[in-house]
Amino acid sequence: MFDHLLHRLRERLVEHLDTPLLLITLMIMATGLATIYSATYDANNRAFAQALNMAVGFVAMWAVAQLPPQKLMRFAVPLYVIGVVLLVLVFIAGVKVNGARRWLSLGFTRIQPSEILKIAMPLMLAWYFHKYEAVLRFRHYLIAGVLLLVPFGLIAKQPDLGTAILVGAAGFYVIFFAGLPWKVLLGMIVGVGAAAPFVWTILHDYQRKRILTLIDPTTDPLGAGYHIIQSTIAIGSGGPFGKGWLQGTQTHLEFIPERHTDFIFAVFSEERGLIGTSILVVLYLLLIARGLMITANASTLFARVLAGSVTLSFFTYAFVNMGMVSGILPVVGVPLPFMSYGGTALVTLFLGLGVLMSIQSHRMLVKK
Image (cartoon, rainbow, N blue to C red):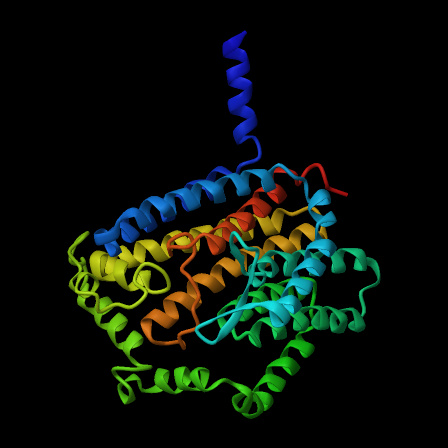
């Protein structure tokens, strides 16, 4: 009797978890923990703290995976409204740190409301398109664009360009998967190009400097160009096979800035070389491929556009982070998914995994 109950409990714990998605994520997480330990070996409690963050994220993922997509839809509007209200409150009573007003103080802790929008934004737009699926017109795409631009503008104004890009990308992917006409998409691309001079004028000085530094980081090697110069040196010095775990000189001589967070890819590349980096890229591609398979098998428009947005958000995280560390994109403060140290962003990523697992495991229950 006890064995039967134990067996049922084990089945219940893994019932809605997608095995391929979970195994790929665990491999990336294990790689991340080892790299964080190496990057912070002189204060290796960071690796332990990250393991705790991962445990919290795993619980959050499991909880979301148990909910069918119909129940996830119920959170769309309230979560979006709460997120936008909190973003407005940031401007009124937010905590300012290093010139950026991004946090709200709760007394015992601080929260960053923009993180909520990474999940709330695609949920809201997926709910919206699902509601009007039978009567979709051009005006619905315009309204969706407004719903996206409001939090995007509020986050960019903080300023937090990295998070604004991630929230904007997540929302755009929903609009794209909902059937955005190609003519409109091309028009948007032309419009963005035409607006570039205006956008340049409203950027903060440090944001303009990051773009100019991308073109030639040697113009300010000890200032704005320092991050890119040191990270590219680390990546190149890894060679084909890397210097070995705990053997990275750029890392342990502390030339790499933010080496356990945004620039962890430089640490990994120095230690594991081209071969290790290629394997890591393959793992991310497998993660994205599995997400796209779940997207293709989704049973409703809500599930399909939401799964597609979450999957391509993982791609955006990885591409932007690797691009900025490699010197082909401006430095915008985007973590490497499931590898960079951090609690809030990691839990958000796990919530995205939970959404994918929910859609995969409940797809037969919601089929029309």
